[in-house]
Image (cartoon, rainbow, N blue to C red; front, side, top):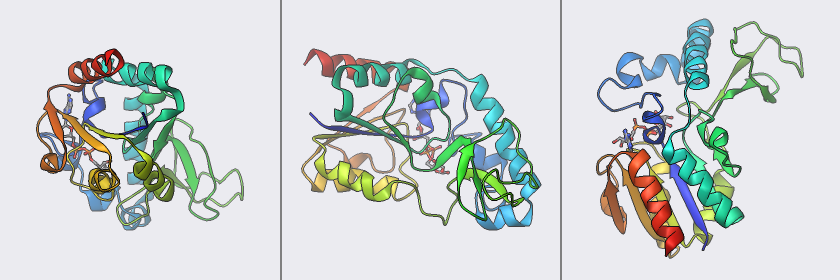
Amino acid sequence: MKIVILTGAGISAESGLGTFRDAGGLWEKYPIEQVATPEGFAADPALVHGFYNARRANSQSAAPNAAHDALAKLEGKIGENLLIVTQNVDDLHERAGSKSVWHMHGALNRAKCAACEQTWNAPSEMHPDDPCPHCRTPATRPDIVWFGEMPYYMEEIYDRLHQADLFVSIGTSGNVYPAAGFVQEAANAGARTLELNLEPSLGASSFDESRNGPASQIVPEWVDSLLKG
Ligand code: APR
């Protein structure tokens, strides 16, 4: 059985990493335009680097939770029949042991050159005039996909959605496209679809089934039931 799993901020909430749109979420504290757009970075690169330096430190001090562990266990059983596409920029899936993880919105532990577009492993702190290790231009930015930029792996993701037997969405509100459209893409290609979320998301009605509860509880329960089945 080929499975594609989409994860969002909700899977990392119980690891202590804030979500974006829940009460007290990140976007209540920081204007998206200022810290999550190319224009915001151009206007104040030091402020944007400061925002991601803080999120990088936060993410490094967090630990994977039982939901991340359950998905790593599932990959251990079904191998390359499982793909995790994550909107998250933390590395909790990898630290739980998952190998096949595609970060469609980029990753906090990667840096990118705004001049030559090459990427490298990010240092814990980044500053606007850090030179690119490839072309030496002082144009370092976080390797994060901002609003208005093209997410990574889109072609490959659609290929995998079209081959999937099961699409599972975990911990995402269904607010942001193209990820919010993946359930329809998979369903149209014949996949069964399941949502595992604290509460019904915006797109809950598009799923064959929607189970609600904290990810650290309902994801391990789902994995165990799948592996027993
Ligand atoms: N267990 C399961 N789900 C949870 C939990 C939890 N413990 N806590 C919160 N959730 C759910 C919320 O109900 C919500 O539906 O996680 C979802 C978080 O939604 P958002 O904060 O909108 O995060 P996300 O869907 O990942 O945002 C998508 O938007 O801002 C951009 O690039 C950013 O990748 C992000 C994208």
